[in-house]
Image (cartoon, rainbow, N blue to C red; front, side, top):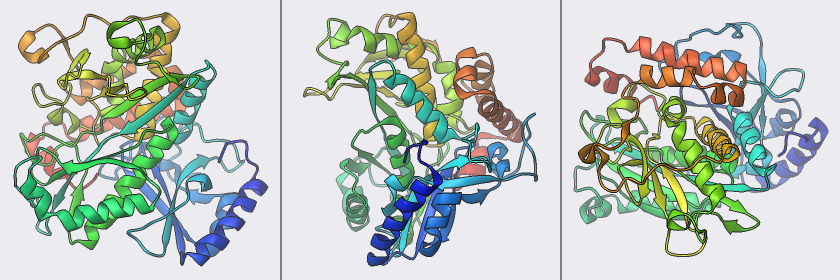
Length: 446
């Protein structure tokens, strides 16, 4: 769906979808969006109401713009408290029957004001505007977000402590992983990898790259699906940045490549490691803005319990070829078109639309300014001592975000102020708490 569709066009599209969904045994449709605290919210309608929802939207409380991870609320100058209403409008181009929830389909939603104009606080709308700004320069972006999670038993303990990446862990949960793979594939997604990760009970899945808004949509769909499959196996899921104190946490690494006329600008160029000038300028812009971008990509107090040196989290503002301790890891790949940059400092608490939109805005600023990447970091920057440490706490990242004129302009005043207010309020919410307290408080919120 494009934002230029009229309500009548949306209704016509829904009418055709209802026929097919009814034939597929679908009874209801779930609409999903992600708030500024990084929590995925949903509303649903019976299938017979899909046409009405597509034409008129479904009511949604505006206060979710200023909700925190514990469902408490903060305020901004534009927030209206209990007053007012927005409309959730499903994007029927992404309408997907849910393989792990028979009888249900899913679609991401845009948020509109009641007069039909786009809500300025809509995070998905922000990501779309950023992608359109890239396209106006004759470029395109392919993106994907790695999804890591911890599965736990009914008591809340990691479901396996077998070695990371280990055969034992894979065999112990092979039926579970097979169902995850089958469900994602049945929903039209191309799974690239599915494997055990480092921490106890941790797994990771990555899917094929696509457009930036589509990649954020897919992140929502994958996480929804993994949670549903897990529930069918009696398992609980946590996407929290850190599940256990001192352990490697759940990343939400953003992979991104820049293209022009079907050619990947990350290889075949004359720059370092084959970069074309546009790609170097773009990645340099994102790297320069990373301290402020952390407020979007590492948005929680718990994010900074994950973002520590020598934990594969990218705690330093530097870049390097295949350097997993650099915040920006350059990947050349083994075939044409595979080159991309990985933002390792982002985690699974991030709203994917804010994360990808923010990186696009920063990258375009670097492109327009002709910025160059600094010298490459080879090896662990913590040992080398040659790189700047990224913010080590949410208040530090929020200070950088507050000073960023670039992100203020890109997000627009309403969305920018809402994000800033939520970050400040969550920092205050957990002020004085121990690391263990923070982990316990948010473990099951994401």
